[in-house]
Amino acid sequence: MQYAILFYESAEDFAARQDPARADYWQGWTSYSGTIGQSGKLASGAALQGPETGATLKAGTVQDGPYADTKEQLGGFFMVEADSLEEALEIAARAPTAGTGAVEVRPVLPMTQGEG
Image 1 (cartoon, one colour):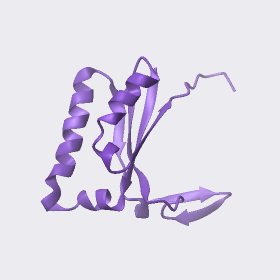
Image 2 (cartoon, rainbow, N blue to C red):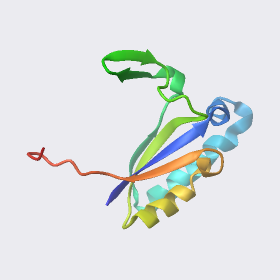
Image 3 (cartoon, rainbow, N blue to C red):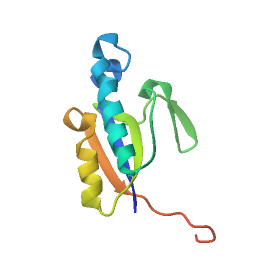
Image 4 (cartoon, rainbow, N blue to C red):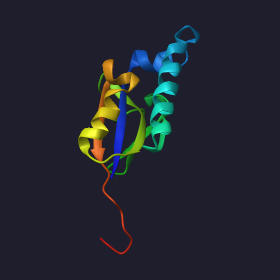
């Protein structure tokens, strides 16, 4: 079964992406994604640009920047193959942001053609 792992990062984490003195930020993600990739569990994923670069469409109106006013913002996601929610949670627990932000795990709802 596929699970989405959503990584919510603090403003400090987003700032670390651009800070040459914080090479450990990207090293942590490279190691984490490499380990999952080598295990055959990683289906896809991406890092997202900062929340200030996005826009939200709500009830037909566009709002610049993030919709949610929270301490953490969505920084990226992985789609993983796991046998259970518990296995997906174990994968998520090793994320670099697990100690500084939040990591959400959700089963993916399969989309099939012809079904409403």
